[in-house]
Length: 111
Image (tube, rainbow, N blue to C red; front, side, top):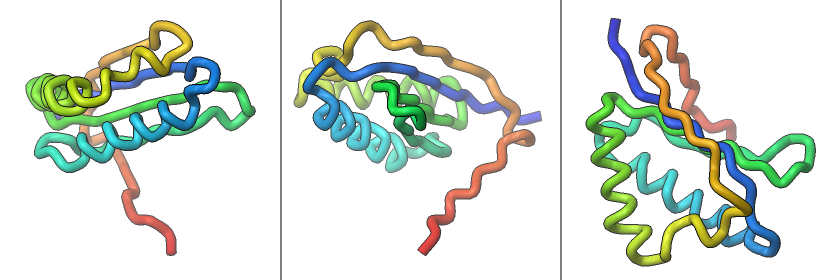
């Protein structure tokens, strides 16, 4: 059994900060995907129109999650000030261990 780490964040944008938060999340998810140890990273808006975002990333190991998170702090947060100023309140964050045998991702994009 091979295990991976899944980070899950649920958050809401502060009023008037929707577009900025989405740009910052996109930058962070793309940054993660370029790093060795990131299996997948994405975010999604609530399908019911609520101002709610789901942000998820899967890492090959806990150390990869730590390394990539630290790289984001050092590289992106230091440049743009981080996400906190764009959030309505504290995000709900969870880190989970998942079995890669159970993980099935279709990363192909439709044309």
